[in-house]
Length: 389
Image 1: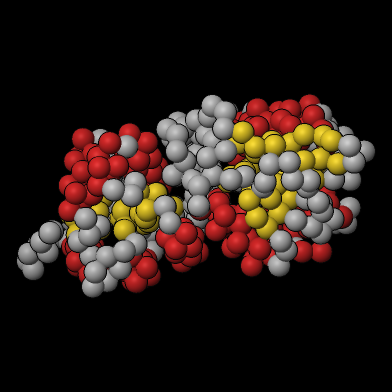
Image 2: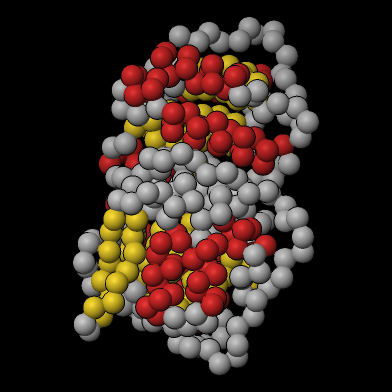
């Protein structure tokens, strides 16, 4: 059990770009606290404290001003969902990553926490032994601390919230540089535009909130004209709950895609966690194909798999967007779409939680437009309906 800091302890200064990321761990498991604390220090971050519940974590925050808090959901006295809004009220630029085991309940709570301001979540193995032996969990956790600690140090509050590749059952992908090394060149479409027959969305870290906002910006009326297919880097269980959240948000049927299911306008299909979702043309339509193949770009599901299949089937008759996320997944798929004549949009850096995936597409010169999140929905609606945004 962690002890509270002494009453006379001075408040520590926040990290600067040249100082170590300051991390606070709040988890009721002594095993988890001990292991994560060791990983944090071995990775070169500064551990400012560990806490067994939200109350202790809040007390520590007031003295140590962490950059990143790793916050468990289920804790005694004050749990993660109760502590989160208090933490953000006390420190609006704080980067909070929720930690939870893979249950439907915890997936639902984690997604709600993203809406409340948490920047991401990470799925913990169900047992202490699993925590001890899971290299993927350790890799994911350290990568998130690095990314969100850097965001805090830059003084930029992330505006879209996670998943993210956070808890995929494969190793985390490398993170693209936050700033493009060269000026971004847009790739405008030929003016003879083709009416889209399908909408594609790829996203990762920060994606759940970004996808919801983009779909709400498109609106149910336009979404009824096309099938919508989404690859959001998420673990199993979370993707089904994510689909339920999207359905409630936009008022249309949304669910994980099923093998050999025919895609229909007005429905939203989310790639199941841990499985690639592609497409195949059949007599009279197009069906979903699922597979457990090797990770692509360190990801399963991978955006590239869906986008490449869609390029082969629908060609220029697509509307697509790459939203916030780590790594470069989606770039090769975007290239296939562009070569087939389809337009690709990318979310801008300022509104992305991590400008990895959209930044990679932008730097490759594949984006027709690079837009802030509030403008993406209207832009896609204009593509789908043929009416000005």
